Image (cartoon, rainbow, N blue to C red; front, side):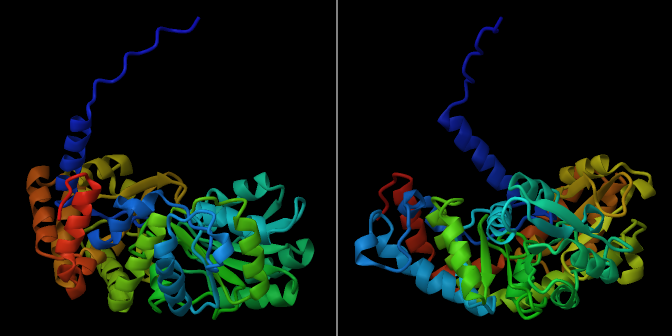
Length: 442
């Protein structure tokens, strides 16, 4: 027998706005060290508050007979003449799709397009080497068989095994994905093995975690390394909206992606696409310096934490090549969940989980990508490391540590907000936001 329906929660719109206000106040005093998150400027967020957020856009070719949805007609150029050309230039690609909604949506689109018909084989990175948890499940739900690349340690692949596997199964696609990743897979070396062992096999690289480092030219471009395509999300090392993209130099792959995406993506969230275009305009100004700071900050922070007695993984390899660090707080006698709670109370948000390669239990995954975007410098890192280590060990009152984190945040300006053009556009942006909120600002 069904129970009596619960009474509606007595939460009003005013309560919700108050919760949002409290969250914003807290967010301005804290730092996210979650490697799969980033921030972006208020200016780049603006389109998601305005009318374009509600509109469809399907007429990329500007065909006069194809304006079946006209709401975005006056803004099409921001996608077609700003976002896409910038991505083609920064991504060194001839074709770009900005239609995927997320990294997982881009993964599904790539597997559905390039992974072959049901019964075909897809080879991807095994979980022990950092492969994304969802890749095999998505491929299998598309009717594809899955085989795994593996390696002698969590950070490298056995290319002899890869060659044997490829000769044996002749996959339609090698899908290179690293969700847990301290060091990038050598795509050029893997592509050489694929071309020799199974020449008809395509190679797609999911660069979600590396996207900002690739677009800034700090990490190798997968297309230059010989991959047929690459893609991923735009909110990890790239400081943009929660969206994704796919890039290629191959006209046939572009055609296949375009034909498939119409059945996997309807609305591609036009407001977020405009935000992506604005984030790219900003990124072309600060991207290379920011990406170098991400890598430099992360490596420096690893050494600082190790110097304060915390166990940072891969010390023998220099800890990391990118934006992720893995901490084994269990070896330091502190459960990762408890360490995360203590850090949260001190104003530092981190990511702990099971499944990190090489861990038997849970580990902590952190990144300095958002901290770099928020403007923190090398000079700030010893203070951040002091707070971090003290919080993990519960050596200082959390409130005092949180005040120190807030001071770090307050002393720096986010990179997007620091651009001269952003300051000049503040009044116009506030007026637009006021109108969107019903304030009828002039």
